Every structure is written in structure tokens, then in C-alpha cells.
Amino acid sequence: MIATLGYALLGLLAREPLSGYDLAQRLTGRVGFFWQARHSQVYPELVRLEKAGLVSHTVVEQQDRPDKKVYSVTPEGFAAIRAWVTAPMEVSPRRDELLLKAYSIWLADPAEGAALFREHQRRHLDQQADYERRVIRLEGEHGAQLQRPGTPLFATYLTLQRGIGSEREYASWCGWVAAQLERGSGAGGPDEEQAEA
Amino acid sequence: MIATLGYALLGLLAREPLSGYDLAQRLTGRVGFFWQARHSQVYPELVRLEKAGLVSHTVVEQQDRPDKKVYSVTPEGFAAIRAWVTAPMEVSPRRDELLLKAYSIWLADPAEGAALFREHQRRHLDQQADYERRVIRLEGEHGAQLQRPGTPLFATYLTLQRGIGSEREYASWCGWVAAQLERGSGAGGPDEEQAEA
DNA sequence: TAAGTCATGTAAAAAGTTACATGATTCT
DNA sequence: AGAATCATGTAACTTTTTACATGACTTA
Image (tube, rainbow over all chains, first blue to last red):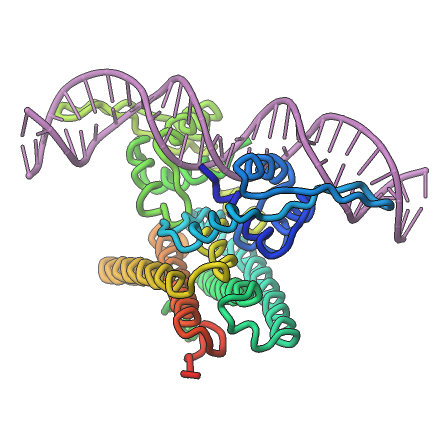
């Protein structure tokens, strides 16, 4: 049985052949928004995938830097990821420590709590802005291609839009929580305008 | 060092004394939205917390059903969770398999992809409706108390609002993705109204 | 010369899931 | 009679994180 991490690697390799090092970089950067892995997880997983015949590698010799193993997806690998992509699945569970803290925020000093949530609001706004810049760049460089479902850029575009949306929502909630803690009262959910009590 | 699961248990026990069984139920239900655990994780963690002096238990004998150990938070436990709640922390990483699938959706048949996202849109709308019902019930049963930061209900209210917001956003994105895949073209992000091409 | 990047691995520990194990009572 | 609930644990396994390990080349 092939684990989710395996499909993450196949998904990256289906776009372009990469080394384990490259894969680990992406899984701690770009696609790290929805799936992460360290190199210590990537290298053994590549061995498993290769044993299963889903990827294969060639050694690329380099003069100025260490040689590397560049992995590609085999026809069987493509079949495997295609089957996985549309297969029914359960909603992924969330593990969000800030929400866990929110659940116990009643125990803390409201001002200190507000500071924590203001800080996280800022971070999510920054992240949102970052995704927005990436979308604008993508739209500038490849315009129409982003609407074509058969291209990798279309898929990248989808995930970036989700990034923007979820960071916006998260930041908005953080701001609302902070406001509640700061004034100690107020009405309405995080999406409504907050009227002074 | 005390793990996040430990604070999850302390957060639940700070509201009311509970058995391991009760804690496991909450961590696969109510608070399962942001943190989950099975009973096999809960029981050993309670032992660790008790050894650390953060919780203590009394055996409650019952006639009609098995005896149980009811745990409560000690003064040291309250100090620990209070310190944790407002302590600076990193943004929790997400592991979302549907987003991972979205990243590789370009490999699949658009119609099959659309079906998957319609299905998940439905699930998130259902979940949103469920949270909304809970908020309405909460507002009905305890009105003004929900605005008082020192009460557990205030904290519950915060997390439910986040539940509503994030499910709404998730459902909206799923619908937008499905629409993109269904018509194979279109413009604008998930929040704009989609004009027919 | 020291720190950072490129590159690939292994080992140990922690966190989490699934399965095993038991037993009384209550509901269908 | 069989399934579900209450109740507590352990064992095995999988997944993920942190640390150990090495070495060449490049940049500050």
C-alpha cells in the first residue's frame, strides 16, 4: 500500500523530474502549505516507490557539486496517481494548536490572549499577501493557460486560490477573536462588521 | 516536556472533571474539529500528566456500569495551561489530502474531478450547517455569557465561529474548483461570482 | 575561515493509528 | 441472542520529527 506522502512525491515528479533534495525543498516550501516532509522521510519513500515500480531514477553527474539521482514517474506511476486523484476520500482531520488555545483562552489574561491573536492575524495576512503576489505573477506570465484543466499551472492556480481564501478567513477570525478579547464584549460573528457596544 | 495532546486534555479537564473515556469521546467528537485522539493515546497521556502532577484522579464506583477514574486539573496543571495558552507559537502546518489531490488534478478526467469536489463541497456545507445549529443553540441557551472572555462558553463560541468560517470557505473553494472542472473555463477566484464564458 | 548551499543517507525518538484484550450492562 | 455502550488498558505498526553523519563547493 502506498501512503499519502508517496502521492505527494508522485504529484511533484509528474510535473518534472526531480532529485530527492529538490523534492524535500518543495515539501518544506511551496507545497508545504498543504503537505510537508523532511528529507529524512523523502529518501526512504523514494526507495519504496522505486521498488513498487512507480518511479525510476538516473544518476546525473555534476562537476561543481555532488552528483544527484533524478527521479521520474513511470507509466505505472502515472496510472497510480491518476487513480488516486479522483478516488473517494474522507475529509482530512485538522490539528490546529491555535484553535486548541482558543478553546482554553478563557483561562488566560484577555490582553495577553489578544496579543497572541493579533500576532497570528498579522502572519496570516502576510501569507495571504504572498499567495496573492504569486497568483498575480502566474496570471501575468501565463494567462489563459490557468483556465485549462489539463495543465499543471491550472492545478497550481487552484491551490493558490485556496491558500488566499483560507489565509484570509483565518486572519479575519484572528482579528475578530482579538477584538473580542480587547473590548471584552461585542456581537456578531467574525464576518460581520463589529459595532461598538 | 508536555506535548500538545497534554494541553488538549488539560483544556478539557479545566472545564469539568472527566474520565479517560469521556476525554476520548470529546477528542473524536466535539473538539475533534481542531484536535483528535483515540483512547489508546489518551490513557497513557493521563498517566504522564498525573506523574507530572498536573492532574489527579479519584475512582468513582458505579453499580450499573464499570467503575471509572475521574481526572481533575491540579493547581500546577492550571498554571501550566495558563502559561501555554498565551505563549508564542508557530502557525500549525496543514496536511490536507484534498489540496494535495487538487495539485495533481490536471492528470485526471475533469468530470471525475468535479464529482469529487462536489462531494466535498456538500460535506463542508453540511458541517457548516451543523456548527451553525450549535451556535444558535448556544446563543439561545446562554446569550450574554458568550461575550464574557472569562467563561468556557465564550471560548467554545470562538471555536465554533472558526468552524463555520473555515467550512464556509472550504465549501466555497470546492464549489469553485468543481465549476472550473465542469466547464473547463471561466475567470475569477473562488469568491467572485462566476460569469458564464 | 566560517557559514551556507547542494546532496544523500541513517538512527532514534515522538506522535498517532489500528488492532488486540477483557468484561459488565443495556438496548434491540 | 446479538449488538451497542461504558470503561480501561496494551501491543504492534505507521508516520513524522529531530538528530547524527559525511563531504564538496561557494559565498561572505
